[in-house]
Amino acid sequence: MEEWRSLVTAEQEVARRRAEVNQLPSRVDLLAKALSSGSAWDRSAALDFLRLFPGDVPKLLDLLVDLSLSTGWVLPVREAIRAARKEIDPSQFARVALECLSDGEAEDYLGLAYLLVEVEAWEALSAVIDRAAASSDPEIREVSRSFTESHGGMLP
Image 1 (cartoon, helix red, strand yellow):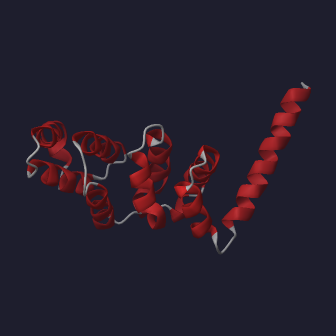
Image 2 (spheres, rainbow, N blue to C red):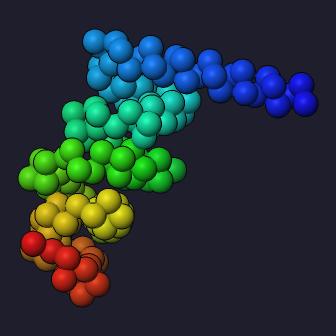
């Protein structure tokens, strides 16, 4: 029982600290540094924060999409983006997605396409599919074919 009380107390303290951070004028800069950090704890805390307080997700979308291409971060990034999905401008999302693919390999296209499906970013998915279809790499073109086949009805 003592361990449980300690856990509850720690959770209450974390909630208080998150509320304090949410009031900071430098919050976006702090979150950007945390997301760019090599520290898994910093990234994890930033993603948890953004999932609970998603208002800054649109401002950090480029960092989040880029981070989603790193193994191990896809699920928490997806949750943060999903929490703010309605606040993200679809054309901004498409632009950010395409910028992340400037040197993309097939696995990047595939990972990003899955992320966009999960957060229902159809305009961005359409842009990624179009870019993939124009690729000289047959594996990347296969991503386009596959996602057009499976999600074509959702595309604008």
